[in-house]
Length: 256
Length: 106
Length: 154
Image (cartoon, rainbow over all chains, first blue to last red):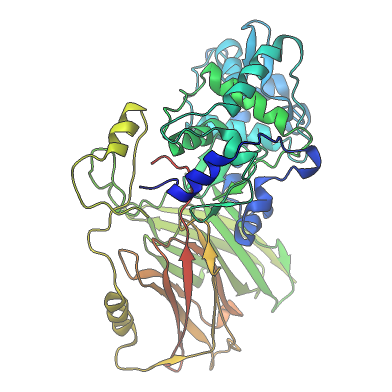
């Protein structure tokens, strides 16, 4: 059976401390990746994720929808207007009265302002646009708000992160807070910070979103994964971004 | 048209060896993966890459399914004269995509 | 990579189907073996002998994912009209096919060096062979340990 071998399962289950990662001890998945993967990420001319960023740049300027409007028509040069944006998502949407992540915000612009069709989760175009927008925040420290109206969603994300789930009955925290740095079936367990999304995962042979990665984690512990865009998924994203406060965005990252 | 990233200097000295890095978006479907009905997903890869320099072939590669998705190929060539470098990728269907880059050689 | 020979749905497939996840496990109906690789190399070199050396094959000793393994092959050569590398051939031991790629160089390359990213289905040996213009063949090999990614779609 692929996934967790029994010894690791026992070790993880026995960990009782629920220590959070102190800011000084925050380490990106980049630090846990091997030399070749880091080299792939460092060079924009050989980073496969950049192929999607390039596609996103083309889509940014393309007029679309019944409004025949491009992103650029309202937002101008993304290098200026989108700088720092990804570092602040998920963000609260007053009209919806809940947080939305970057993908949802992009689709909201498409449907409400461009009068175009929503882009499907994990579709090439949505990945490309999200990657292009997030890339404009590369180097910007993560800083999401979790105050006021966001408090209950942050609390939900916090609870989900610490809740045991799945047939293997493990919580995110048990691996990513208590056992990061240790090996799981040959792979090093990272701290689980979403600094580089959407990222090129070698396992997918493609760029993919944070939600896709979280679904992989949940399948890993044999839990039914959240549907794309589910409130739990966004709440967890919000929690994870807050947990990664101060860490610079790396989009598009490369990971195993 | 698949997205392509080509890295090469825009100018070089005559006789200088230049490094060229190429990356093209393509799933390189190996033919060995199964879909969720258990049927094999048919092979569909880029099987040939050619670089010509002012019309003369200076480098080529024959690729098999063991080449990773979004194929990356880095090679070198001697900057002999100013002109055009043409990069061509051909897939299993016989379709070729070409990209052209200029180089100034002094 | 996960090799499955039974056609009955596994528990994982049923669970995955319930979760709406699509699967793409890899199956190798006829795995390459050391013998297949040797046969493929023999087809390349014919009656010539394969000499060890001169070829520098750079591969990581252990990789976190076999889907994209960085590989560089370089050969010390003047790359002149009279003394150059004509082609570089990469073979593997345990993928479904022994062939990985063939690169055609020549004096216009300036130096005999190529880099690419390859797929390795399992921990195995990779062999790089250079053919020189004088008809000689030189080779080098490297062993790579391929670890599986944890927490995937399967």
